Length: 156
Ligand SMILES: [Zn+2]
Image 1 (cartoon, rainbow, N blue to C red):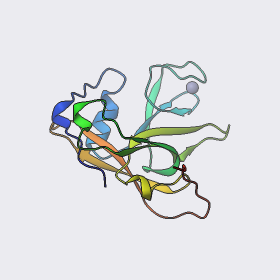
Image 2: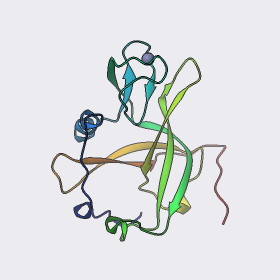
Image 3: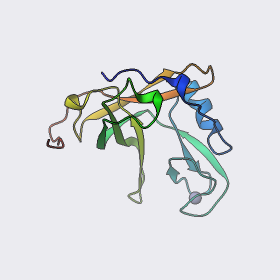
Image 4: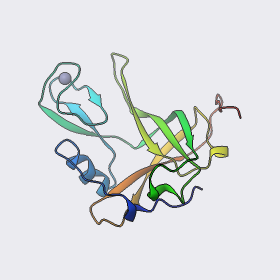
């Protein structure tokens, strides 16, 4: 498991587009934006649907499960908060319940709780929630939750 992220060294400031998303993570819900007119879903939140241009938006509560679509390994901390955490894996996750009829899907990024040797593209993942030093800020992290037959790893 990677080392801890020192949240006291970063400030997370929810804005107009993300404040409700952060309220969701505080309640251990992983939300994505959903258009009330055409049902399209996307992440990260932004103020209009990129399918029909509607600004009548809501939220879709995902199951917080998905498949690791890709990943990178961060070995050089850019911020002081991550000095103890390196090396850590940032995953790109395809959410299980956000595959739409038109073929679009929602991919989200997040810092994995697993070490590099334990991750592989194609493995199932689930979200976990990590409380920061700020009472209202809970950060989602992702964790390998099982096995898969067809997986792939980056070579050295
Ligand atoms: Zn729409």
